[in-house]
Length: 385
Length: 234
Image 1 (cartoon, chains in turn brown, cyan):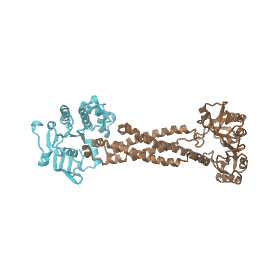
Image 2 (cartoon, chains in turn green, red):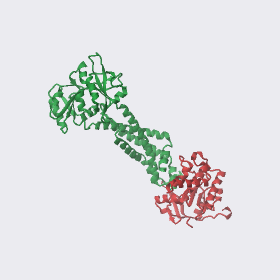
Image 3 (cartoon, rainbow over the protein chains, first blue to last red):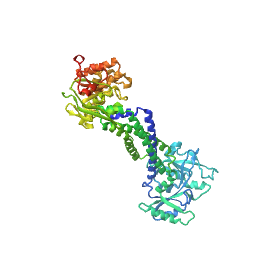
Image 4 (cartoon, chains in turn brown, blue):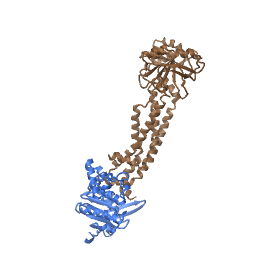
């Protein structure tokens, strides 16, 4: 018990110092956890579903469109099983702070390639029947309290609607989808490409990207090259990659600062180490007399070192736990915002173990100096001073 | 010496920069088991150094420190630590209680080094606190106690593990006369009724009165001889 209670009481002798040091630890672990979550999201794109999904975009720029009929040529390749086309709609609901991750898709082929978005047979029939119907993820529906049958005006920042003469697109909620895995985004909005194509004022018969589902076991790298060769000399040359690479590249447009953030995290951890070490040294220096008394009572240097280590561990663990909690809350908050680029951004369980491991090591390093002092402590000399 | 304490041919030299400070040169003191000895002498005569040598808190430059049959001056740090936990209780001028622990927890501290279970520990702490008359204040923090009460708790901490030897470094130095007398009579009881060997460093002649023998360290160094106190003072 003494190893548990005494270090805690010692740590809380000066609560202001404890919590201020803790704060620097919180920042370091917060950054570490958030960056780990981003990396997890980037690395988690290689699922069974998407390892054979190939994304074809315009070679020059992802914002340039491709003719929809490219899909037919791609589908003709022997190693391609299915093809679908997707157009980026974007947009927002009511005000620009409610940004939507909306894409126009061809329902039937899209669902065959993306089975992770779960729809019932009834939902499918409903969507096929309703041209202006949209399918939304449950999370998005819950956020805006949408129900099937609701008519919702969606504002586009890109596409002018010929029918309304404005950027407003009125659509009806045809279905609400669930997801097969937690990594799948459940805040998307899908509208029908035919409805979108007919009503948009420009860019008809074009799509933002095409998705081909390669046959299982096929060489996706070779197939990607094959697809790009098909359109090499056309006005809209293509660039094909696996979906995993596509998502990573797309995400990096927004979060390519991750390498820089890693450096920042390293710098923060280094600074934190100095702060925490200084705090621990100061704390122990203030009570060398007490430690000398404990030694005179029969406490060995090892036992005192354990007590000091526990004290440092409390401080680092408190900071680490708070940092992880803050990171979890903020990741939850930005999940909707980054859903398209970082699907399934979440804190991996491995991160918790890493945080624990770092905390244990960090506590050991930051109490190294005081522990050395304890081993060198001359009882008689200390008691006289 | 019957299983008591013996400082044999002790030299102690401190180095302060390039200067050497000789505290003792060939000091010999023997204290029998069950004695209550007052170590007296002017400041700088080495009273505290001698006490620390007896408790294994410091090592002589030359000579041997025997406690019982053990030559503690040759023991390793780890052995000394274990030995202190079992055989020696310290009482300091400034009581050095841990400010974050209650009186009870402070007294319990040395028992954390034993194999006693919680119930046994609590029982022993309660006995020690009762002996020094501090049962009522068991749950108080040191800052909530007076100087005399703190010193009583320090005594309880020193005796809780039932050591053979109590080494006291001016235990009444910071106390008023009345409180000091109460502490001294407590030490007297511990010596008389519980057979503890007590070595007490003091400047106070009245405090020395309760001891069974006074060793004037200045004279001891000069004459290398103990002074037996008159029968009447014992």
